[in-house]
Image (cartoon, rainbow over all chains, first blue to last red; front, side, top):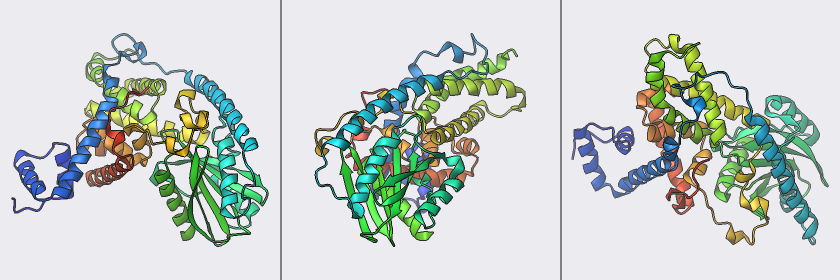
Length: 258
Length: 176
């Protein structure tokens, strides 16, 4: 055991094997007495190893000619990748729109149309149609966020602005106004680095003006709804439930603070 | 402009690692390699301005900044998904809710982290930059690197636990 207390920074450095030997020994001894912390440090090592295992195969791939300084001089590149992915995306969107149309018309018998259950259905349809649209998922892009917020605020008759969801790795793509049988609704779309989309759907509530956070899901789209003070919210996507729940909590906290 | 010999000597061995970091951030082989090509082109144009800066953090800084710009652009444009990237459950109606057990790999989990957490996990854990080098690349103090590292690891640990640890097992799908 050491006289000097072990710090969090030292524990992190220990995960990375970057402590000087005498300090590493002291940290090891301390961890032996703190099994909970030892488990935490060991799981940090496992996650790092998993990341390396997933990424190290890139090192063994043959180097493309354009990246080999010995044979080619790096030149400004004329982007050719855009068209390729745009076309694949359009194909995917057509495919998904077909699928979405099929189930939206088929198997709804006496679905709830009011309250947050109704809102959930509207949000799921909007997500299914717009999040997969590669041509124009949003009417106004994120660089017009102020205009978008103003538009929603006017049509929903209350101040609305796109929450910052960077804490969940989500960037705002933009949004559009959508029609519901209860009048206009605002749809914000976000995307993370994995390409996963998350929709935030918001509209005024006539029924269930205040409702707790509730888990919803239909046909592979999951999410959470709630209502605060006459405004109803839905956070939907095809990402896992826990992630969507964290995102919904972020949204709710920011709207309550506003 | 001819590629200076010392640039070839110093930069060539680092290219595989640059491709790895680009791939981890962009998750697309072609986009990542295009980005590395842009990095090399900039590095060549600015080689004389490097002024003795250590090449590894210098190149990773260029790469990191270009990648972040690209990710923001992609988000604004609403980058289209490749057909291969579309989750199965959105191409076909799943048999049941129970059937959709989370099948995610570690790279999908880190994509759900804030960008600043993802970068620090990759630069320290995978690229093995020193804490000081990572601070240079991300333009923050070393103390910030340590606290981000601690928060990022803890958050990822909780996400891994939610998948029942499955995401730590090697995936059959190699990053493409």
